[in-house]
Image 1: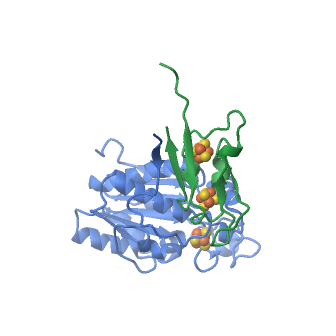
Image 2: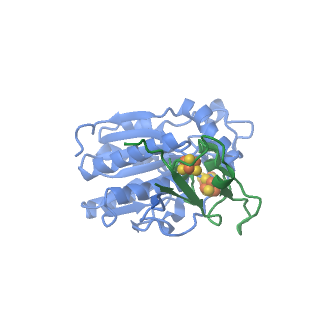
Image 3: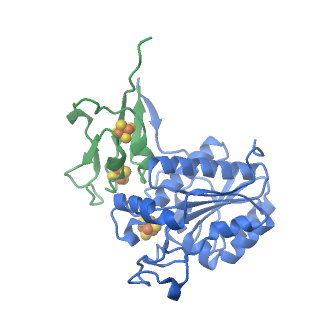
Length: 80
Length: 251
Ligand code: SF4
Ligand code: SF4
Ligand code: SF4
């Protein structure tokens, strides 16, 4: 059986986000960045940037670390 | 097909938390809601929110809640549990609430071995009122009422409430954790689960003290507040199981 590499992805609800950036500090693959557009609350929300990050070892594994850390439950994680 | 592996837990309403960015309360609320779902006790649990930043907790939890006056969480939870012994009753209290005005009822509830669970959120300040010194403020820590830092000669020492409650003979499980990193968040979840299970098995008083970032009053960024827990707070309040008489006893 071929070894499966874990594949994941996340979504960030930019209106729930309060710009604490804890998710950015814990993502082992550095896949989250700060958006340059304000949300309605006036925060620069976090933004998932998987598509911009094609370097090796920078794939979302669906590890959920970002979501576990997000105080405002703005992140949902998908796997598979 | 991609499978959703993380989402808002069922027992949290779709409300936006009023807590500041990076506040530990938000994380702790989510953990409690996840545990209620996992233990399947949503119809049986009753929460008792405090006065303080978490005073509106009943706006977020989609379970029965009964608000307590400042500091009286253990007494209110005792009353609810004695009338409705088949319910799982938890009080949710900050350090200003439980370790100052609520010290007396908390110690006596623990000593009587009330079969309740207390979630003790320790962020070392009075958060809601603007960051005054709390009993748990660290030696040397700045607060609005200790500019220049808490001087233990003048202001007394930080109170080790959890250790005091461990001496009480009716307490069965007391652990101190933190929510400043994914690892510590998961550890906190295991601790609260264990505390709820101890209550479900009728063993006695259980409490989880959680070191919780308050970036606003600490005047730090959320990321630095998490670091400060690790670098400063745990030196006074080490993360550990303080008392465990439930190991092996819970089903
Ligand atoms: S942890 Fe949550 S609230 Fe904080 S920046 Fe990330 S998505 Fe936003
Ligand atoms: S699930 Fe893991 S790898 Fe994916 S964005 Fe979140 S922290 Fe990064
Ligand atoms: S003042 Fe502190 S404890 Fe209160 S909501 Fe803000 S960060 Fe949280």
